[in-house]
Amino acid sequence: MGEASLVEDYHRETIRDRHLPEKLVLWDETLRDGEQTPGVRFTPEEKLRIAELLAEAGVPLINAGIPVVSDEEARAVRLLAGAGLPTTILAAARTVPRDVEAVIDSGVRHIAIFVAASQVHLKFKLKMTEEEVLAASLASVTRAKEAGLHVAFVTEDTVRAPFPFVERLYRAVQDAGADRLVVADTVGVMTPLTFRWYLGEFVRRVRPRELSVHCHNDFGLATANTLTAVELGAVSPHVCVNGLGERAGNASLEEVAVALEQLYGYRTGIRTEKLYELSRLVEELSGVPLAPNKALVGYNAFSHEAGIHTHGVLAHTLTYEPLQPERLGRHRALILGKHTGKAALVEKLKERGIQAREPALAELLRRVKEVSERRSKEDVGRFVGSYRNRFDHPGLTDAEFWEMVDQVGLKAVPP
Ligand code: MN
Image 1 (cartoon, rainbow, N blue to C red):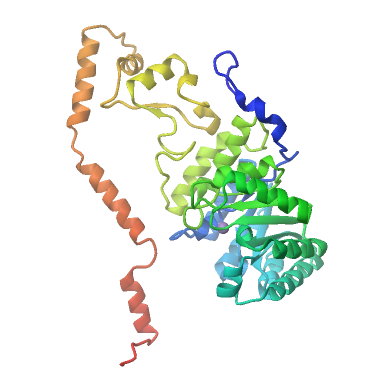
Image 2: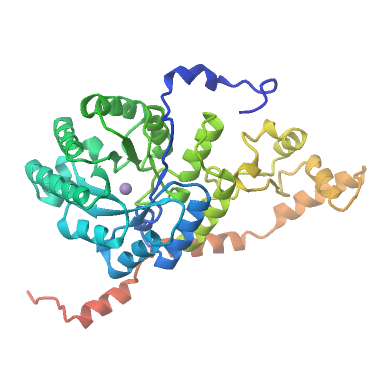
């Protein structure tokens, strides 16, 4: 947490308000929710590569997917379950008998059983009553427990559901043997303060054996809300590499783990120096490029161009860096451009053993700035254009779709 004599550390003022769990079981959802990112799919072999690196980074629990989705997905789950990885592999199921059987058949020892909880989901999506949801949940949990599985019970949209129903449902499944209860902010509407209140109520009313949370990033609050949950003792928060996931994604593995390590002084069991490699692998296999300004793993997270900043960092990294890039397996980058100052040039010249001297240094700086300002921006426009084009159409093209409609013989009915 920094050198006490150089920077103040006010985190110690809030230690009494934290009830961090003794042991954290980070639950990675990259291969399930992350794969549900629009346009993303992983082959079973790609899932294995990601799972191997997750395990190497010390992630203790990995959701491999939902085996009932397809034969390939079932193969992926079996592949991961049988790979002998030093981590726990979990698979997910709706509260539907064939889903639960598919998980049992896949060879995993852990299941996450999910159903929706809010009125809007029950009425418009599931078309089920509260009683039907309760009955289906109990049947699924009971079946999974009979099969000897460790059971996590998840409701979608927990935090927008009536509390009396949430309380009744979660108490019932816990009584039926559910080992771990997951509260989901499925559309990312919690704020840290409200989530603190919500989880406090949840713990008081349900008394979970183990609390887990699933936070989405629709308002950019997924990591903050997840940390709030961990502060309240949540043991197994869901995370995704690069914050992948539906819409704006989930809480990011690297943000949650490194914030806990660096800002809370908490030992997560994660080998943070593997996180950049993991991030790049997932970027490559998902096809979802990192935002350059993404916290910790974005390309700019440890880059400096402005003269004042570069000068500061060269004098002491604590001036403009809250942590060392090596903690993530990264390196610092000094960018030469319009905002460069002399300190960066002096440092750069050292690479070839050249001692900077005036007036050559001032002339060199003038040229660096001039070339940078004169440089054509054509490639910038082209790059952004191709990027936008890719994300405007991440799935099948319209032409591909309408051709299929034709092939299966669907036609417009004449009025
Ligand atoms: Mn989700």
